[in-house]
Amino acid sequence: MGRRQIDSEPTRWVSLILLVMGLFSCSLVYMFMSSILRPNEDAKFSLIPEVESMEVEENDGGCCRGIANFELWGAAVKWGSDHKFNSSIECCNACKAMCNVNDGPCLCDSWVFCGNPDACGSKFGECWLKKQKDPMAPDRQEAGENTIWTSGLIFGKGEGIVKMETKYGALRIKLLPECAPRSVMYILELLTMRHCVGCQFYRAEGRGQSWNSKGHHLKSASFGPPFALIQGSLEAEGVIFNKIPTEECPIIQRGSVAWIGSGPDFFISLANHEEWKKSYTVFGQVLPEDMEIAEKIATLPTIPDVWNNINVSVLEKPVSFSVRKFNKVSIKA
Image 1: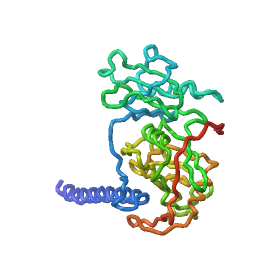
Image 2: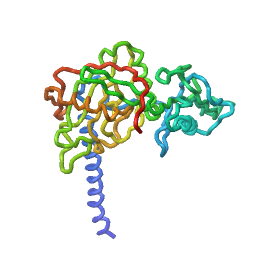
Image 3: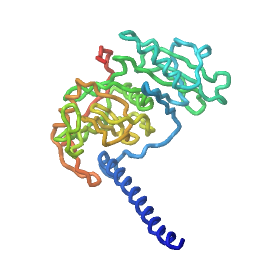
Image 4: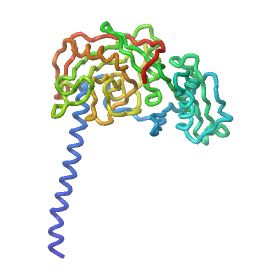
């Protein structure tokens, strides 16, 4: 018995050492990922998202998120008093079902759900399906803690597209309100501005020898630098930017448009980045035919810099852009 006790002592120490080493390794990976997209400790954006109450629901058919304590107005296509569900995801999917008709118009582009039994009372479960006059400028009724409703937008095929206009061409971006509703609402707010003063790309890194033209990583190649992205800011003068809580964080793909932390800094990926795991809120996708504009920006003259011991490439001259609504077009699925 005595020998077993003596033998177990070093075993416990070995286990403890392995645990500490594992935690240390995870910390290093996190710090490295943060450093890739953060210029310095004095940067105006944070990599740690602010946590607040929000709807976080999804299913195998894709995202179905809404904004809690927020009510969208609009013409009702289904009255909630006669149309009830147990969850906001069911309400969202009911709207989606009216928007996925092949080559037809979206009969529903917004939904409103009451999901708090105590606050909703007899309205609990009501699912109002609505049609906006302009889904890119939705009719907002109320927002705040006293609002009992949860609301969301649905953009159909060829809808919900904005363009970032630069002197090198326009980047058309399909917004993803079902996955990142708060992010999309901020972008829609920018559309009301005549100019997006302050909106610019300030970092540009090509695919180098690590990714091919389709964004696939090449075997045995490094994962950067360069990191295959263009990075910028969406903080416009005249628009108050509130930190956006973490929303849907899928694997970054070529063309993904994602926040760095809680914004307003963001990046457009030129490659697939499975190695980044699910780390960034993706709120849009650049149309494939416009990726050549992003690639062009990535070839502009840069100045080498070091951000938290990571080599990066900063544009000699930042590229300003405006954010505009793009008229509905026919887009291949």
